[in-house]
Image (spheres, rainbow, N blue to C red):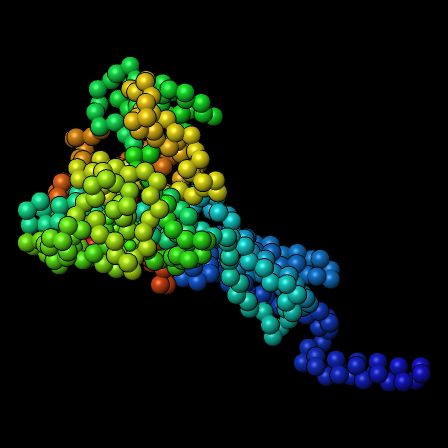
Length: 438
Ligand SMILES: [Ca+2]
Ligand SMILES: [Ca+2]
Ligand SMILES: [Ca+2]
C-alpha cells in the first residue's frame, strides 16, 4: 500500500516536473492575468458597461479581487492564482444616468444591473470572460401618440378619426388587459373663482363630501372620460418596442363606409385622415347613449373598450388639443372608487356628473395637451407626471397629432423618449398610426 502510494506520488511529481520543465520553480497555483468584459443584455444591444464594479472571489481561499470596468466595459486583474472563482458585476444608475443611457426615465430612483457566474475555473488557458448584466423590467407603457385635432371639417373626417397610441417602452412583454385609460378633467377657463385654485384649476378640496388621504388637488386626478381595456389577464400582449392603437372608431376613414343610419360616410380628401381598420381596440357607445353617432359603428374584428364614463357620444377628444390622457393600473375595480362633483356644484342631484378620483400613484404614464403656448388652460396633470405640455402647431382639424420622439433603438427594440416632460418628448406632426415622429 505504502509502495503504491509512493509510486503514484512519484508519477505525479514527474508529470508535474515535465509540465513545468521550461520554468524552474513555478508554483502549483500559477497566476494569470484575467480579463472580464461586462456587457448589457440584448435589451440594451449588449452595449459595453463602463463603470461596472467587478468582483472575483476564489471559492476555496476566499481571496477577492475587485475593480471597475473602463470605457470599453472591460477590466484586467493581474496575477490571479489559478482556481475556481465566482465572478460578479454590478452597476447602479440613478434616474438621470439611466435616462442618459436609455432615453427614458426608470420607475424608481435608481436602477441596479447585476451579473453573476459561479464556480468558474480560472487558469492560464481560461482567463478571459464575458458576463451579461441583467435587471428587472425596465421601463413601462408610454402614450406615444394623441390624435385629438381631427381632420378638416369639410374635406376630412372631423373628429371621428381620432385615436391614441400606447407603446411598450420596457424590456418585457406587457399586457393591456384590465388597464385603464382616462381623460383628465380640467377647467377650460383661467378665471379665479371661490371654487378654484389660484391658477384657475378646480379646487377639489371644496367638492361636496370630499374625503381623501393626502391632497385632493395634487395627489389625485379626476375623470373626464374613462375606459378599461378588455381581457382576462394575458389576452392582449404588447411586445417590447411594439404599440397598440385605441381608435374612436376602427374603420378606414379614408374610404367610404356605411353609418348606423344607413347613409354613407365619406371624405373628400383621404390624405387628410387615417386608416384605423387595423386598430387594436375601439370605443363603441351605440348601446350606451340614447342617440348614437352615425359614425360610431362596431367593427366586429376589433375588441371594444369597457365603457365606464364618456364625454359625448364616442371617444371624442378636444379638437383644440386641451386633452390630458393618463393610463393606469389598479387591482381594485375603479368603478368602486369614490366619485365627486366639480366644486362649483354644491347641490348634488341625480343629474350631477360625478368624477372618479384616481390616485396619482396608480398612473403609469400621462401626457398633457394644450391648445398652444399662448393659449393655455390651467395645468391639468401633476408636474411629476408631465412637467410641461405638447400642442400641435396646425391646431384644430389639422390632421396633426402629439407624437412622442424616438430616444434609442436597441436591436429591434425602439425606445421612446420619456423625460416626463411633453415639451421635450412630444412634437406636433401629421397623425400616423404606428408610425414614428422621427
Ligand atoms: Ca366608436
Ligand atoms: Ca368592435
Ligand atoms: Ca412618462
